Length: 102
Ligand SMILES: [Mg+2]
Image 1: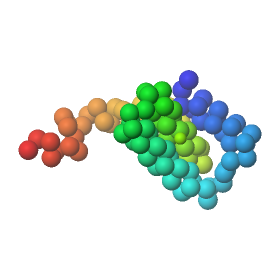
Image 2 (image 1 turned 135 degrees about the vertical axis):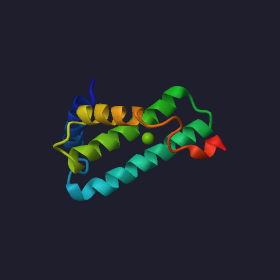
Image 3 (image 1 turned 90 degrees about the vertical axis):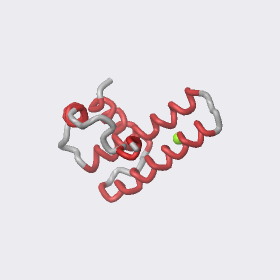
Image 4 (image 1 turned 30 degrees about the horizontal axis):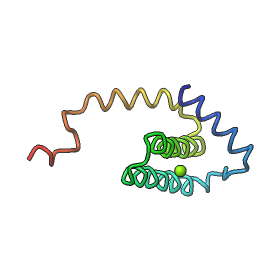
C-alpha cells in the first residue's frame, strides 16, 4: 500500500469514527503523533515486543498522514516522499550529525 492509499484509508476511518477532521485540528493531530512517538520510545525502553513497538510507530504514521490530508491536501505524498528521498541521498555522509565526527 502506498502513502496516498494509506491516506485515503485513514480518511475513511476518520469519517467512520467521527475523529477530528478540520484544519483547526491539525495541531492536535501533530501533538498526537508526538504522543505516539513517546509511546514507541516507552515501549522500547521497557523491552516490549517488537510488534508492540511497531504498532506505536504505525500510530505515528497514521497521525502524520492524517495531518498531511488536512494541512497539504494537494500534495501527493508518494511523489513527495520520493523527492525527499532523492534530496536526502545527495546530503553528505553523517549530514546533521557532525558532532559524531569529533
Ligand atoms: Mg499508541
